Image (cartoon, rainbow, N blue to C red; front, top):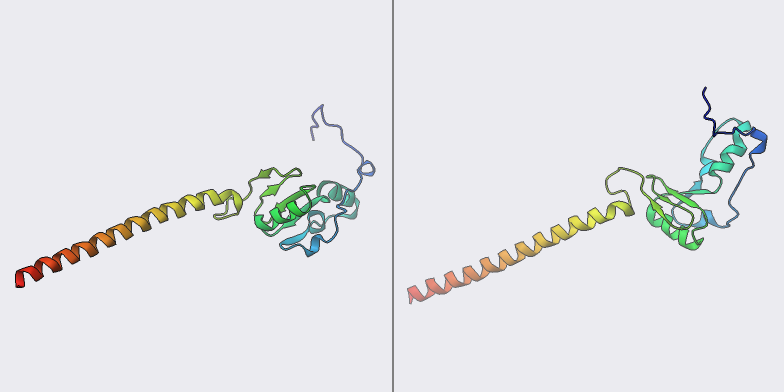
Length: 146
């Protein structure tokens, strides 16, 4: 294994666990767990896992992630099940390529809805014109009969 010159490996004993002190996270809607609790590994790596993931919350979706971030004032990282991230401080990072996968894909959903809205308006105008045309035809036919 080649280790770059800028890398300085640390002994396992030098890495300290980090964990969230926030209370009542498990009562929050959409909360899944702390990321470190979702990982299994040999006990000797427990502190490394806690150090890297002990301050990361996993949520079901972006809506619940936003609510938790607001409640706890963006103090820790939150990751959704589809891979979107709210970083400490509140910045967002995209995740999943799954269609309809939360906040970052909503702009395309809005565009599609607006396109659908335009089409619905066009169809309504077309329907109204057809109704007017039918009324005119009825008037013309009625005037011919009399």
